[in-house]
Image (cartoon, rainbow over all chains, first blue to last red):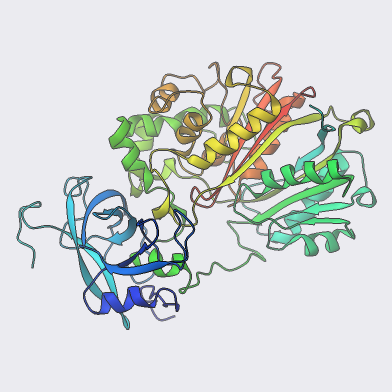
Length: 144
Length: 381
C-alpha cells in the first residue's frame, strides 16, 4: 500500500472565502454585523446572537498559544514530523482555532503557553493551510 | 417526584470483555442483549422499545433479536449515548410510548470485526479545520485541554498520573479488569509518551465487548429476579463537535449542565452520593467531572484524587470497576460505567462499596462533545 498523504481540507461554499483568503496569504474570518462578535469556524450564522447578517474580514494574524499536545503517534503523512505539536491558538480577535506550530521545536521547553504567535501559510495539495509560528525574538531566532 | 418512577430491571455485559476476535460488533450486541433480558427474567417478546447507537443501529439490532419495536431511539453521540438512551427511555415509558425498553451496546473496538470503518469527511468542519493539523483520534484531540488546565490550576504531572494509579487499585480487585497489577506514579510517568502530557497509562484501553440494559416502569419492580435500580434523575447536554471550540479548556460546561439537571430531578446534592462513575477516556476527564459535578472546587480535583479520596477506603469511591483506564474501553465506554453503577446499587460488584444508596454515572461522548448523567438509587426518589 502506498504511503498515505496528509489530510487535505475540502472547502464548502460557506467556507470558500476562508480558503481563498489563505491562498492570498490572509487569515479571513467572520464577524456578526448586528452584534459585532468575531467567530470561527466559518458558518452563515452568528453563534452569539443568531443573526444571519455576517461578514468576512481579515484578521490580524496575531495569536497566543492556548494549549497543545505533542503527538508521538503520527497521523497518515505526518510520519516524518513526529513528534509534532497539535495546538489550539487564541486569535487576537478572540476566537480560537486548531493549528500546527512551525519554526519552533516540538518540546515542552520551547512551547510555552501564552507565547505570541503569528499566522503563516503552508501548501497542502491545492490548498494553502494557515499555521502559526512564534513572533520574532520570543524563541530567540528571527523568523522569516 | 410526581412522574411515575422508572427502573433498570435487567443489566449485563457480554460473557467476556477484552480481546474477542470471534465476535462481530453485531454479535456483541446480541450477546449483551440476551444476557440483559435473561437478567431481567424476560424474553425478547417482552421488549417493545429499542435503543442503540447508529452503527449497527436500532433497526439492525432489533431485527437480529426478532423484535419489532413500538419505540426506537438511534441517538449516536459517542460513548455517552447509552446514558442518553436511558434518559429518553424514561420519557418514553412515562409517556406510554413503550413499556419495556432494551438498550444495547456492542463494539469490536480492538479486533474491529464487523466494525464500521473509521472515516473522516474532509469537507466537514473537523475535516477542514482540525484533521489537516495531524489529528489522529481521541489521543490527539481529547487531550489538548489538559495543559491549559495544568497551567491555570497548578495540576502536576504526578497528580495527573495518580488518577491512573487510584483506578488501578480498584481494578486490582476486579477479575474482569484487563489490567490488574498495582502501579505507581513512577510507572505511569515511565510509560511511553503518547501525546504529551499524556503517557500510555493515562490513556484508556481499546477492547472488545458489550453490555445491555432493560428499562421499565417502577410499578413492576417486584416482578423481576434482581433488586430494582431506580433511575432517580437524568441529564443530558452537548458542547462542541471540535475540541478547539470547547468554551473553556479548564472546565466542562456540559458536564456541569447535565449534572445539575440530574441532581435537581433526583433532589440530591453531592453529599448524598455514595458511589460515582466518571467516564475516563483519559486521566484528566475524572478531574473535570469531579469539579463540574461540584464534589470539589475548581482546581482541587487533582489533589483530591492524589490524597486517596477516590480509591479503595476513600470517602468517594470513583470508577470502581477500574474504569476505561484499567477495566475495559470498547470505544463507547458509557455502557460499562452504567453497568458498574447498577452492580454497586444491587450489591453485586467485584469491588463492592458498603451498601451504597445512590450512585451517579457521568458519561462523555466525543471529545467533550456530549454528556449524560444518571442518578441511580436503591430506592425511588
